[in-house]
Image (cartoon, one colour):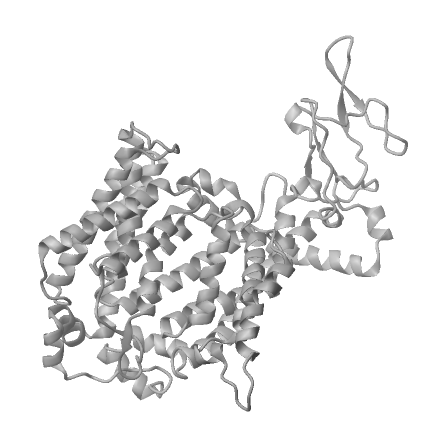
Length: 603
Protein backbone atom coordinates (compact mmCIF):
# COMPACT_ATOMS: atom_id res chain seq x y z
CA UNK A 1 0.00 0.00 0.00
CA UNK A 2 1.15 3.52 -0.77
CA UNK A 3 0.94 6.71 1.29
CA UNK A 4 2.10 4.95 4.49
CA UNK A 5 -0.87 2.59 4.79
CA UNK A 6 -0.37 -1.06 5.66
CA UNK A 7 -1.97 -4.08 4.09
CA UNK A 8 -2.39 -5.55 7.56
CA UNK A 9 -4.34 -2.52 8.76
CA UNK A 10 -6.70 -2.81 5.79
CA UNK A 11 -7.22 -6.52 6.47
CA UNK A 12 -8.12 -5.79 10.09
CA UNK A 13 -10.67 -3.14 9.12
CA UNK A 14 -12.62 -5.55 6.90
CA UNK A 15 -13.09 -8.10 9.70
CA UNK A 16 -16.31 -6.44 11.03
CA UNK A 17 -17.90 -6.52 7.59
CA UNK A 18 -17.05 -10.20 7.17
CA UNK A 19 -18.45 -11.01 10.60
CA UNK A 20 -21.64 -9.05 9.91
CA UNK A 21 -22.17 -10.85 6.62
CA UNK A 22 -21.45 -14.46 7.60
CA UNK A 23 -21.84 -14.74 11.39
CA UNK A 24 -25.52 -15.83 11.40
CA UNK A 25 -26.36 -19.49 11.21
CA UNK A 26 -29.37 -21.19 9.72
CA UNK A 27 -30.79 -22.22 6.39
CA UNK A 28 -31.17 -18.66 5.01
CA UNK A 29 -29.39 -16.40 7.49
CA UNK A 30 -29.99 -12.65 7.13
CA UNK A 31 -27.08 -10.63 5.81
CA UNK A 32 -26.83 -7.26 7.48
CA UNK A 33 -25.00 -5.45 4.70
CA UNK A 34 -27.33 -6.84 2.06
CA UNK A 35 -30.36 -5.69 4.06
CA UNK A 36 -28.85 -2.20 4.15
CA UNK A 37 -28.37 -2.26 0.35
CA UNK A 38 -24.59 -2.23 0.77
CA UNK A 39 -22.52 -4.41 -1.52
CA UNK A 40 -19.93 -6.12 0.72
CA UNK A 41 -17.46 -6.54 -2.14
CA UNK A 42 -17.51 -2.82 -2.88
CA UNK A 43 -17.13 -2.04 0.82
CA UNK A 44 -14.08 -4.29 1.10
CA UNK A 45 -12.41 -3.04 -2.07
CA UNK A 46 -13.16 0.64 -1.48
CA UNK A 47 -9.87 1.43 0.24
CA UNK A 48 -7.63 -0.32 -2.34
CA UNK A 49 -9.56 1.45 -5.08
CA UNK A 50 -8.99 4.80 -3.40
CA UNK A 51 -5.27 4.13 -3.06
CA UNK A 52 -5.00 3.04 -6.69
CA UNK A 53 -6.83 6.12 -7.96
CA UNK A 54 -4.73 8.40 -5.76
CA UNK A 55 -1.52 6.79 -7.06
CA UNK A 56 -2.56 7.29 -10.68
CA UNK A 57 -3.53 10.91 -10.01
CA UNK A 58 -0.21 11.48 -8.27
CA UNK A 59 1.69 10.16 -11.28
CA UNK A 60 -0.29 12.43 -13.62
CA UNK A 61 -0.33 15.75 -11.77
CA UNK A 62 2.86 15.25 -9.69
CA UNK A 63 3.43 18.55 -7.82
CA UNK A 64 0.59 20.52 -9.42
CA UNK A 65 -1.78 19.51 -6.59
CA UNK A 66 -1.21 19.68 -2.86
CA UNK A 67 -0.92 16.38 -0.93
CA UNK A 68 -4.35 16.95 0.65
CA UNK A 69 -6.03 17.60 -2.70
CA UNK A 70 -5.18 14.30 -4.37
CA UNK A 71 -7.13 12.08 -1.89
CA UNK A 72 -10.01 14.56 -2.06
CA UNK A 73 -10.06 14.34 -5.85
CA UNK A 74 -9.83 10.54 -5.71
CA UNK A 75 -12.79 10.45 -3.31
CA UNK A 76 -14.87 12.57 -5.66
CA UNK A 77 -14.09 10.34 -8.63
CA UNK A 78 -15.00 7.19 -6.68
CA UNK A 79 -18.30 8.74 -5.62
CA UNK A 80 -19.10 9.42 -9.27
CA UNK A 81 -18.20 5.83 -10.14
CA UNK A 82 -20.36 4.25 -7.44
CA UNK A 83 -23.35 6.56 -7.06
CA UNK A 84 -24.05 7.96 -10.53
CA UNK A 85 -27.75 7.50 -11.29
CA UNK A 86 -29.11 10.56 -13.08
CA UNK A 87 -28.47 11.04 -16.82
CA UNK A 88 -26.18 13.99 -16.11
CA UNK A 89 -24.10 11.95 -13.64
CA UNK A 90 -23.90 9.01 -16.05
CA UNK A 91 -22.49 11.27 -18.76
CA UNK A 92 -20.04 12.68 -16.23
CA UNK A 93 -19.02 9.14 -15.31
CA UNK A 94 -18.60 8.10 -18.94
CA UNK A 95 -16.36 11.04 -19.77
CA UNK A 96 -14.14 10.94 -16.69
CA UNK A 97 -13.92 7.22 -15.97
CA UNK A 98 -14.47 5.40 -19.25
CA UNK A 99 -12.91 8.06 -21.43
CA UNK A 100 -10.14 8.97 -19.00
CA UNK A 101 -9.07 5.40 -18.30
CA UNK A 102 -9.17 4.51 -21.99
CA UNK A 103 -6.94 7.45 -22.89
CA UNK A 104 -4.60 6.68 -20.00
CA UNK A 105 -4.17 3.03 -20.96
CA UNK A 106 -3.88 3.49 -24.72
CA UNK A 107 -1.92 6.75 -24.97
CA UNK A 108 0.26 6.88 -21.86
CA UNK A 109 3.48 5.58 -23.47
CA UNK A 110 3.00 7.56 -26.67
CA UNK A 111 2.47 10.79 -24.74
CA UNK A 112 5.61 10.08 -22.69
CA UNK A 113 7.59 9.68 -25.93
CA UNK A 114 6.07 12.92 -27.17
CA UNK A 115 7.24 14.74 -24.04
CA UNK A 116 10.76 13.31 -24.33
CA UNK A 117 11.10 14.39 -27.97
CA UNK A 118 9.78 17.86 -27.15
CA UNK A 119 12.33 18.33 -24.36
CA UNK A 120 15.37 17.49 -26.48
CA UNK A 121 16.85 20.54 -28.26
CA UNK A 122 17.08 20.11 -32.01
CA UNK A 123 20.88 20.46 -32.07
CA UNK A 124 21.27 17.38 -29.86
CA UNK A 125 19.85 14.98 -32.41
CA UNK A 126 22.21 12.98 -34.64
CA UNK A 127 23.34 14.67 -37.82
CA UNK A 128 23.01 12.51 -40.95
CA UNK A 129 26.33 11.26 -42.29
CA UNK A 130 27.32 9.03 -45.19
CA UNK A 131 29.40 6.65 -43.08
CA UNK A 132 26.61 6.00 -40.58
CA UNK A 133 24.05 5.61 -43.36
CA UNK A 134 26.15 2.80 -44.85
CA UNK A 135 26.66 1.02 -41.52
CA UNK A 136 23.12 1.26 -40.13
CA UNK A 137 20.75 -1.68 -40.22
CA UNK A 138 18.14 -2.38 -42.85
CA UNK A 139 15.15 -1.32 -40.76
CA UNK A 140 16.88 1.84 -39.58
CA UNK A 141 17.70 2.71 -43.16
CA UNK A 142 14.09 2.20 -44.25
CA UNK A 143 12.87 4.25 -41.30
CA UNK A 144 15.23 7.11 -42.13
CA UNK A 145 14.28 7.12 -45.82
CA UNK A 146 10.55 7.09 -45.07
CA UNK A 147 10.93 9.92 -42.56
CA UNK A 148 12.95 11.95 -45.07
CA UNK A 149 10.26 11.57 -47.73
CA UNK A 150 7.46 12.45 -45.32
CA UNK A 151 9.35 15.45 -44.01
CA UNK A 152 10.20 16.71 -47.49
CA UNK A 153 6.51 16.71 -48.40
CA UNK A 154 5.62 18.73 -45.29
CA UNK A 155 8.70 20.91 -45.08
CA UNK A 156 7.19 24.05 -46.64
CA UNK A 157 6.28 26.53 -43.96
CA UNK A 158 7.92 24.52 -41.19
CA UNK A 159 11.22 26.30 -40.56
CA UNK A 160 12.95 27.47 -37.39
CA UNK A 161 16.36 28.72 -36.34
CA UNK A 162 17.82 25.19 -36.25
CA UNK A 163 15.48 23.22 -38.46
CA UNK A 164 17.74 22.47 -41.42
CA UNK A 165 19.42 19.14 -40.83
CA UNK A 166 21.79 19.49 -43.80
CA UNK A 167 22.40 23.24 -43.94
CA UNK A 168 23.59 25.82 -41.47
CA UNK A 169 24.82 24.28 -38.24
CA UNK A 170 24.95 26.51 -35.19
CA UNK A 171 27.36 25.23 -32.61
CA UNK A 172 26.21 24.64 -29.06
CA UNK A 173 28.67 27.34 -28.04
CA UNK A 174 27.30 29.89 -30.53
CA UNK A 175 26.19 32.15 -27.71
CA UNK A 176 29.87 32.55 -26.77
CA UNK A 177 30.55 34.18 -30.11
CA UNK A 178 31.92 31.18 -31.94
CA UNK A 179 31.73 30.58 -35.61
CA UNK A 180 28.68 29.47 -37.54
CA UNK A 181 29.85 26.99 -40.16
CA UNK A 182 28.26 25.67 -43.31
CA UNK A 183 28.19 21.90 -43.61
CA UNK A 184 27.83 20.81 -47.24
CA UNK A 185 24.81 18.51 -47.45
CA UNK A 186 26.42 15.91 -49.72
CA UNK A 187 30.16 16.35 -49.30
CA UNK A 188 32.45 13.34 -49.29
CA UNK A 189 33.49 14.04 -45.75
CA UNK A 190 30.25 14.10 -43.82
CA UNK A 191 30.56 14.11 -40.08
CA UNK A 192 27.75 13.46 -37.61
CA UNK A 193 27.34 16.30 -35.16
CA UNK A 194 25.25 15.53 -32.07
CA UNK A 195 25.67 14.83 -28.39
CA UNK A 196 26.02 11.13 -29.12
CA UNK A 197 28.83 11.59 -31.63
CA UNK A 198 32.26 13.12 -31.17
CA UNK A 199 32.26 16.61 -32.67
CA UNK A 200 35.09 18.35 -34.48
CA UNK A 201 34.43 21.87 -33.34
CA UNK A 202 36.41 24.70 -31.86
CA UNK A 203 35.95 24.80 -28.11
CA UNK A 204 37.14 27.45 -25.69
CA UNK A 205 39.99 26.84 -23.24
CA UNK A 206 40.89 29.12 -20.39
CA UNK A 207 44.51 30.24 -20.14
CA UNK A 208 45.36 30.69 -16.47
CA UNK A 209 48.36 32.93 -17.18
CA UNK A 210 46.62 35.39 -19.45
CA UNK A 211 43.11 35.07 -18.09
CA UNK A 212 41.79 34.97 -21.64
CA UNK A 213 39.75 32.40 -23.43
CA UNK A 214 41.57 30.80 -26.37
CA UNK A 215 40.30 28.41 -29.01
CA UNK A 216 41.66 24.99 -29.69
CA UNK A 217 40.55 22.01 -31.72
CA UNK A 218 39.19 18.99 -29.84
CA UNK A 219 40.89 15.75 -30.78
CA UNK A 220 38.31 13.51 -32.44
CA UNK A 221 39.81 10.02 -32.38
CA UNK A 222 41.82 9.92 -29.13
CA UNK A 223 41.14 10.37 -25.46
CA UNK A 224 40.00 13.71 -24.11
CA UNK A 225 42.60 16.15 -22.93
CA UNK A 226 43.14 16.76 -19.25
CA UNK A 227 41.73 20.26 -19.46
CA UNK A 228 38.25 19.23 -20.70
CA UNK A 229 35.64 20.98 -18.63
CA UNK A 230 33.36 18.73 -16.61
CA UNK A 231 31.69 21.52 -14.66
CA UNK A 232 29.75 24.64 -15.52
CA UNK A 233 31.37 28.10 -15.18
CA UNK A 234 29.69 28.39 -11.76
CA UNK A 235 31.36 25.19 -10.57
CA UNK A 236 28.32 22.94 -10.70
CA UNK A 237 28.84 19.49 -12.14
CA UNK A 238 27.40 19.11 -15.62
CA UNK A 239 24.24 17.07 -15.68
CA UNK A 240 24.47 13.78 -17.52
CA UNK A 241 21.77 12.68 -19.89
CA UNK A 242 18.99 10.58 -18.35
CA UNK A 243 18.91 7.00 -19.63
CA UNK A 244 15.43 7.55 -21.08
CA UNK A 245 16.75 10.23 -23.45
CA UNK A 246 19.68 8.37 -24.95
CA UNK A 247 17.73 6.09 -27.34
CA UNK A 248 16.06 9.15 -28.86
CA UNK A 249 19.40 10.87 -29.48
CA UNK A 250 20.25 8.28 -32.13
CA UNK A 251 17.47 9.77 -34.27
CA UNK A 252 18.07 12.49 -36.78
CA UNK A 253 16.18 15.75 -36.51
CA UNK A 254 13.93 14.74 -39.39
CA UNK A 255 13.15 11.39 -37.79
CA UNK A 256 12.32 13.08 -34.49
CA UNK A 257 9.95 15.55 -36.11
CA UNK A 258 8.15 12.91 -38.13
CA UNK A 259 7.78 10.80 -35.00
CA UNK A 260 6.35 13.74 -33.05
CA UNK A 261 3.65 14.26 -35.66
CA UNK A 262 3.03 10.52 -35.96
CA UNK A 263 2.57 10.27 -32.20
CA UNK A 264 0.22 13.25 -32.28
CA UNK A 265 -1.88 11.74 -35.06
CA UNK A 266 -2.04 8.47 -33.14
CA UNK A 267 -3.26 10.26 -29.99
CA UNK A 268 -5.90 12.22 -31.91
CA UNK A 269 -7.12 9.08 -33.66
CA UNK A 270 -7.32 7.03 -30.46
CA UNK A 271 -9.22 9.78 -28.62
CA UNK A 272 -11.66 10.09 -31.51
CA UNK A 273 -12.24 6.32 -31.50
CA UNK A 274 -12.74 6.32 -27.73
CA UNK A 275 -15.39 9.02 -28.05
CA UNK A 276 -17.17 7.34 -30.95
CA UNK A 277 -17.17 3.76 -29.65
CA UNK A 278 -17.08 3.09 -25.88
CA UNK A 279 -18.12 6.51 -24.55
CA UNK A 280 -20.88 6.93 -27.10
CA UNK A 281 -22.21 3.42 -26.45
CA UNK A 282 -22.17 3.84 -22.66
CA UNK A 283 -23.98 7.19 -22.77
CA UNK A 284 -26.59 5.76 -25.13
CA UNK A 285 -27.40 2.80 -22.89
CA UNK A 286 -27.09 4.35 -19.43
CA UNK A 287 -28.05 8.01 -19.85
CA UNK A 288 -30.31 8.29 -22.91
CA UNK A 289 -32.46 5.12 -22.81
CA UNK A 290 -30.84 3.68 -25.92
CA UNK A 291 -31.05 6.83 -28.03
CA UNK A 292 -28.22 7.85 -30.35
CA UNK A 293 -26.19 10.49 -28.43
CA UNK A 294 -25.42 12.70 -31.43
CA UNK A 295 -28.98 12.50 -32.72
CA UNK A 296 -30.26 13.18 -29.22
CA UNK A 297 -28.03 16.26 -29.02
CA UNK A 298 -29.47 17.56 -32.30
CA UNK A 299 -32.99 17.29 -30.93
CA UNK A 300 -31.95 18.65 -27.53
CA UNK A 301 -30.61 21.87 -29.06
CA UNK A 302 -32.47 22.29 -32.36
CA UNK A 303 -35.65 20.27 -31.84
CA UNK A 304 -37.96 23.31 -31.72
CA UNK A 305 -36.90 24.79 -35.08
CA UNK A 306 -39.75 23.97 -37.52
CA UNK A 307 -37.64 24.06 -40.68
CA UNK A 308 -35.06 21.69 -39.22
CA UNK A 309 -37.74 19.33 -37.95
CA UNK A 310 -39.34 19.26 -41.40
CA UNK A 311 -36.01 18.56 -43.10
CA UNK A 312 -35.15 15.75 -40.67
CA UNK A 313 -38.53 14.10 -41.17
CA UNK A 314 -38.41 14.40 -44.96
CA UNK A 315 -34.84 13.07 -45.05
CA UNK A 316 -35.67 10.08 -42.88
CA UNK A 317 -33.51 11.20 -39.95
CA UNK A 318 -36.40 11.57 -37.52
CA UNK A 319 -35.56 8.16 -36.05
CA UNK A 320 -31.93 9.14 -35.55
CA UNK A 321 -32.59 12.64 -34.18
CA UNK A 322 -34.75 12.58 -31.05
CA UNK A 323 -37.33 15.27 -31.79
CA UNK A 324 -39.61 16.41 -28.95
CA UNK A 325 -43.38 16.61 -29.44
CA UNK A 326 -45.15 19.95 -29.60
CA UNK A 327 -46.56 20.80 -26.18
CA UNK A 328 -50.02 22.29 -25.49
CA UNK A 329 -49.87 22.45 -21.68
CA UNK A 330 -50.05 26.23 -21.53
CA UNK A 331 -52.00 26.54 -18.29
CA UNK A 332 -49.68 24.23 -16.37
CA UNK A 333 -46.57 26.08 -17.48
CA UNK A 334 -48.11 29.44 -16.61
CA UNK A 335 -48.75 28.11 -13.13
CA UNK A 336 -45.05 27.26 -12.76
CA UNK A 337 -43.99 30.88 -13.37
CA UNK A 338 -43.49 33.31 -16.19
CA UNK A 339 -39.94 32.13 -16.90
CA UNK A 340 -41.19 28.57 -17.35
CA UNK A 341 -44.01 29.91 -19.49
CA UNK A 342 -41.49 31.64 -21.77
CA UNK A 343 -39.19 28.62 -21.82
CA UNK A 344 -41.79 26.02 -22.70
CA UNK A 345 -44.54 27.94 -24.53
CA UNK A 346 -43.02 31.02 -26.14
CA UNK A 347 -39.54 29.83 -27.13
CA UNK A 348 -39.61 26.09 -26.50
CA UNK A 349 -37.12 24.16 -24.37
CA UNK A 350 -34.63 23.59 -27.19
CA UNK A 351 -34.75 27.17 -28.43
CA UNK A 352 -34.27 28.40 -24.86
CA UNK A 353 -31.06 26.41 -24.72
CA UNK A 354 -29.90 28.10 -27.91
CA UNK A 355 -30.70 31.47 -26.35
CA UNK A 356 -28.63 30.52 -23.29
CA UNK A 357 -25.74 29.47 -25.54
CA UNK A 358 -25.91 32.75 -27.46
CA UNK A 359 -25.98 34.73 -24.22
CA UNK A 360 -22.94 32.86 -22.86
CA UNK A 361 -21.05 33.40 -26.12
CA UNK A 362 -21.81 37.11 -25.89
CA UNK A 363 -20.46 37.21 -22.33
CA UNK A 364 -17.32 35.36 -23.44
CA UNK A 365 -16.69 37.72 -26.34
CA UNK A 366 -17.18 40.83 -24.20
CA UNK A 367 -15.07 39.39 -21.38
CA UNK A 368 -12.19 38.37 -23.65
CA UNK A 369 -12.25 41.77 -25.35
CA UNK A 370 -12.05 43.41 -21.93
CA UNK A 371 -9.19 41.15 -20.86
CA UNK A 372 -7.21 41.88 -24.02
CA UNK A 373 -7.82 45.61 -23.71
CA UNK A 374 -6.69 45.68 -20.07
CA UNK A 375 -3.73 43.33 -20.56
CA UNK A 376 -1.26 46.22 -20.73
CA UNK A 377 -2.90 48.29 -18.01
CA UNK A 378 -3.77 46.07 -15.05
CA UNK A 379 -1.84 43.31 -13.34
CA UNK A 380 -2.29 39.58 -13.82
CA UNK A 381 -4.44 39.07 -10.74
CA UNK A 382 -6.98 41.65 -11.87
CA UNK A 383 -7.17 40.11 -15.34
CA UNK A 384 -7.75 36.70 -13.79
CA UNK A 385 -10.67 38.01 -11.76
CA UNK A 386 -12.39 39.11 -14.95
CA UNK A 387 -12.86 35.42 -15.71
CA UNK A 388 -14.51 35.02 -12.31
CA UNK A 389 -16.91 37.79 -13.23
CA UNK A 390 -17.61 36.08 -16.54
CA UNK A 391 -18.58 32.90 -14.69
CA UNK A 392 -21.04 34.88 -12.57
CA UNK A 393 -22.54 36.62 -15.59
CA UNK A 394 -22.94 33.33 -17.47
CA UNK A 395 -24.20 30.94 -14.82
CA UNK A 396 -25.95 32.93 -12.09
CA UNK A 397 -28.96 34.00 -14.21
CA UNK A 398 -29.11 30.91 -16.46
CA UNK A 399 -28.74 28.02 -14.02
CA UNK A 400 -32.27 28.35 -12.65
CA UNK A 401 -33.70 28.52 -16.18
CA UNK A 402 -32.42 25.06 -17.14
CA UNK A 403 -30.28 23.41 -14.43
CA UNK A 404 -29.83 20.12 -16.29
CA UNK A 405 -28.53 21.86 -19.40
CA UNK A 406 -26.16 24.00 -17.32
CA UNK A 407 -24.82 20.91 -15.55
CA UNK A 408 -24.34 19.14 -18.89
CA UNK A 409 -22.54 22.18 -20.31
CA UNK A 410 -20.19 22.33 -17.31
CA UNK A 411 -19.45 18.62 -17.67
CA UNK A 412 -18.62 18.91 -21.36
CA UNK A 413 -16.50 22.03 -20.82
CA UNK A 414 -14.60 20.28 -18.03
CA UNK A 415 -13.89 17.32 -20.32
CA UNK A 416 -12.68 19.69 -23.04
CA UNK A 417 -10.47 21.55 -20.55
CA UNK A 418 -8.90 18.29 -19.41
CA UNK A 419 -8.26 17.14 -22.98
CA UNK A 420 -6.71 20.46 -23.97
CA UNK A 421 -4.55 20.46 -20.85
CA UNK A 422 -3.44 16.92 -21.70
CA UNK A 423 -2.37 18.09 -25.16
CA UNK A 424 -0.61 21.14 -23.71
CA UNK A 425 1.24 19.33 -20.93
CA UNK A 426 2.27 16.53 -23.32
CA UNK A 427 3.33 19.10 -25.94
CA UNK A 428 1.30 17.42 -28.68
CA UNK A 429 1.59 19.38 -31.95
CA UNK A 430 0.11 21.51 -33.35
CA UNK A 431 -2.29 22.51 -30.59
CA UNK A 432 0.03 22.63 -27.57
CA UNK A 433 1.88 25.85 -28.39
CA UNK A 434 -1.22 28.00 -29.10
CA UNK A 435 -2.78 26.84 -25.83
CA UNK A 436 0.41 27.63 -23.92
CA UNK A 437 0.68 31.10 -25.45
CA UNK A 438 -2.98 31.80 -24.70
CA UNK A 439 -2.77 30.76 -21.03
CA UNK A 440 0.63 32.33 -20.33
CA UNK A 441 -0.65 35.85 -19.41
CA UNK A 442 -3.19 34.50 -16.91
CA UNK A 443 -1.33 31.91 -14.84
CA UNK A 444 -0.13 32.58 -11.30
CA UNK A 445 2.60 31.15 -9.11
CA UNK A 446 0.59 28.06 -8.22
CA UNK A 447 0.51 26.98 -11.87
CA UNK A 448 4.31 26.87 -11.96
CA UNK A 449 4.46 24.19 -9.28
CA UNK A 450 3.95 21.31 -11.69
CA UNK A 451 3.27 20.36 -15.30
CA UNK A 452 -0.50 20.99 -15.11
CA UNK A 453 -2.12 24.44 -15.23
CA UNK A 454 -4.99 24.00 -12.80
CA UNK A 455 -6.41 27.50 -12.32
CA UNK A 456 -9.08 27.40 -15.02
CA UNK A 457 -9.91 23.76 -14.30
CA UNK A 458 -10.46 24.37 -10.58
CA UNK A 459 -12.43 27.51 -11.35
CA UNK A 460 -14.90 25.46 -13.37
CA UNK A 461 -14.95 22.62 -10.82
CA UNK A 462 -15.66 25.05 -8.00
CA UNK A 463 -18.63 26.47 -9.89
CA UNK A 464 -19.93 23.07 -10.95
CA UNK A 465 -19.61 20.88 -7.84
CA UNK A 466 -22.55 22.44 -5.92
CA UNK A 467 -24.78 22.16 -8.99
CA UNK A 468 -23.82 18.53 -9.61
CA UNK A 469 -24.42 17.67 -5.95
CA UNK A 470 -27.79 19.41 -5.91
CA UNK A 471 -28.96 17.59 -9.03
CA UNK A 472 -27.90 14.29 -7.47
CA UNK A 473 -30.56 14.78 -4.78
CA UNK A 474 -33.22 16.47 -6.92
CA UNK A 475 -36.27 14.88 -8.51
CA UNK A 476 -35.88 14.33 -12.23
CA UNK A 477 -38.81 14.31 -14.62
CA UNK A 478 -39.52 14.97 -18.26
CA UNK A 479 -41.17 13.28 -21.21
CA UNK A 480 -39.66 11.33 -24.08
CA UNK A 481 -37.02 11.93 -25.42
CA UNK A 482 -35.85 14.03 -22.46
CA UNK A 483 -36.65 11.68 -19.61
CA UNK A 484 -34.64 12.74 -16.57
CA UNK A 485 -33.73 16.13 -18.02
CA UNK A 486 -36.41 18.23 -16.33
CA UNK A 487 -35.55 19.22 -12.76
CA UNK A 488 -38.41 19.72 -10.33
CA UNK A 489 -37.81 22.72 -8.08
CA UNK A 490 -35.02 25.26 -7.81
CA UNK A 491 -32.58 25.87 -4.97
CA UNK A 492 -29.99 28.53 -4.16
CA UNK A 493 -27.49 25.74 -3.53
CA UNK A 494 -27.37 25.23 -7.31
CA UNK A 495 -25.48 28.51 -7.71
CA UNK A 496 -23.58 28.49 -4.41
CA UNK A 497 -20.37 27.58 -6.24
CA UNK A 498 -20.78 30.43 -8.71
CA UNK A 499 -21.43 32.85 -5.85
CA UNK A 500 -18.48 31.60 -3.81
CA UNK A 501 -15.87 31.40 -6.56
CA UNK A 502 -17.11 34.10 -8.92
CA UNK A 503 -18.03 36.74 -6.36
CA UNK A 504 -16.51 35.89 -2.98
CA UNK A 505 -13.06 34.77 -4.08
CA UNK A 506 -12.73 37.63 -6.57
CA UNK A 507 -13.76 40.24 -3.99
CA UNK A 508 -11.40 38.83 -1.35
CA UNK A 509 -8.47 38.87 -3.75
CA UNK A 510 -9.08 42.34 -5.17
CA UNK A 511 -9.73 43.99 -1.80
CA UNK A 512 -7.16 42.01 0.17
CA UNK A 513 -4.29 42.73 -2.21
CA UNK A 514 -4.96 46.45 -2.34
CA UNK A 515 -6.32 47.35 1.06
CA UNK A 516 -5.41 44.41 3.27
CA UNK A 517 -3.41 45.70 6.24
CA UNK A 518 -4.40 43.48 9.17
CA UNK A 519 -3.58 39.79 8.86
CA UNK A 520 -5.31 37.00 10.74
CA UNK A 521 -3.52 36.12 14.00
CA UNK A 522 -2.82 32.50 12.93
CA UNK A 523 -0.60 33.68 10.09
CA UNK A 524 -0.81 33.27 6.36
CA UNK A 525 -1.47 35.78 3.62
CA UNK A 526 -5.21 36.23 4.28
CA UNK A 527 -6.27 39.64 5.60
CA UNK A 528 -9.27 40.75 7.64
CA UNK A 529 -10.26 43.19 4.91
CA UNK A 530 -10.23 40.47 2.27
CA UNK A 531 -12.30 38.10 4.42
CA UNK A 532 -14.83 40.86 5.08
CA UNK A 533 -15.07 41.55 1.34
CA UNK A 534 -15.58 37.82 0.74
CA UNK A 535 -18.45 37.69 3.24
CA UNK A 536 -20.11 40.80 1.80
CA UNK A 537 -19.87 39.50 -1.78
CA UNK A 538 -21.29 36.08 -0.84
CA UNK A 539 -24.11 37.73 1.12
CA UNK A 540 -25.01 39.91 -1.86
CA UNK A 541 -24.87 36.90 -4.17
CA UNK A 542 -27.18 34.79 -2.00
CA UNK A 543 -29.70 37.62 -1.67
CA UNK A 544 -29.57 38.29 -5.42
CA UNK A 545 -30.11 34.60 -6.19
CA UNK A 546 -33.05 34.51 -3.78
CA UNK A 547 -34.59 37.57 -5.40
CA UNK A 548 -34.15 35.99 -8.85
CA UNK A 549 -35.91 32.82 -7.66
CA UNK A 550 -38.87 34.85 -6.42
CA UNK A 551 -39.04 37.17 -9.43
CA UNK A 552 -38.76 34.26 -11.86
CA UNK A 553 -41.72 32.53 -10.25
CA UNK A 554 -39.91 29.40 -9.08
CA UNK A 555 -40.43 30.09 -5.36
CA UNK A 556 -43.07 32.01 -3.42
CA UNK A 557 -42.18 35.05 -1.39
CA UNK A 558 -40.92 34.37 2.13
CA UNK A 559 -39.77 36.43 5.08
CA UNK A 560 -37.05 38.85 4.05
CA UNK A 561 -35.61 38.88 7.58
CA UNK A 562 -35.24 35.09 7.58
CA UNK A 563 -33.40 35.17 4.26
CA UNK A 564 -31.07 37.98 5.35
CA UNK A 565 -30.11 36.30 8.63
CA UNK A 566 -29.41 32.95 7.00
CA UNK A 567 -27.47 34.60 4.18
CA UNK A 568 -25.30 36.42 6.73
CA UNK A 569 -24.54 33.19 8.58
CA UNK A 570 -23.69 31.31 5.38
CA UNK A 571 -21.48 34.16 4.16
CA UNK A 572 -19.65 34.39 7.48
CA UNK A 573 -19.08 30.63 7.65
CA UNK A 574 -17.71 30.39 4.12
CA UNK A 575 -15.52 33.47 4.66
CA UNK A 576 -14.03 31.98 7.82
CA UNK A 577 -13.34 28.72 5.99
CA UNK A 578 -11.58 30.60 3.21
CA UNK A 579 -9.45 32.43 5.77
CA UNK A 580 -8.26 29.34 7.65
CA UNK A 581 -7.87 27.01 4.66
CA UNK A 582 -4.22 26.22 3.97
CA UNK A 583 -4.06 22.57 2.84
CA UNK A 584 -6.37 22.68 -0.18
CA UNK A 585 -7.54 24.74 -3.10
CA UNK A 586 -10.09 27.29 -1.89
CA UNK A 587 -11.85 27.23 -5.27
CA UNK A 588 -12.96 23.65 -4.51
CA UNK A 589 -13.22 23.35 -0.72
CA UNK A 590 -14.96 26.65 0.10
CA UNK A 591 -17.82 26.13 -2.42
CA UNK A 592 -18.48 22.77 -0.78
CA UNK A 593 -18.71 24.44 2.64
CA UNK A 594 -21.05 27.13 1.33
CA UNK A 595 -23.18 24.45 -0.35
CA UNK A 596 -23.48 22.59 2.97
CA UNK A 597 -24.45 25.79 4.80
CA UNK A 598 -27.06 26.77 2.22
CA UNK A 599 -28.56 23.29 2.12
CA UNK A 600 -28.45 22.89 5.88
CA UNK A 601 -30.20 26.19 6.61
CA UNK A 602 -32.59 25.75 3.67
CA UNK A 603 -32.09 29.24 2.38
